[in-house]
Length: 108
Image (cartoon, rainbow, N blue to C red; front, side):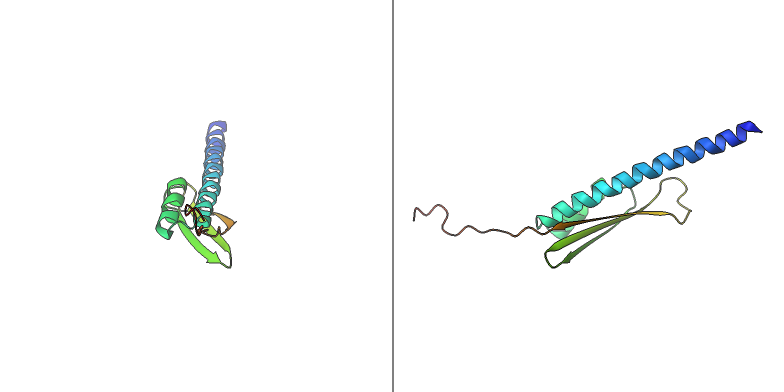
């Protein structure tokens, strides 16, 4: 009787650790994407940077508002994907302005 309960508890602990690891990956991916979007990288490059850091199968959304960029990463927990449980993380960064230096190198 004790052995099945012990196996169930161990499976729940492993699932919980995998959920925490996936959440950390979502945080890192959203931050990396927000940094890339803030630098005015092309949208495809922002999604690619975010996808590289995100868990497999994650949905990525990139939005721009007045002076801010917002990257959202939504992923399912590994194993037990049938459960209606999703991890969601969002990062917001201030958009950097592109500075064009006029007269640089002209000796004026």
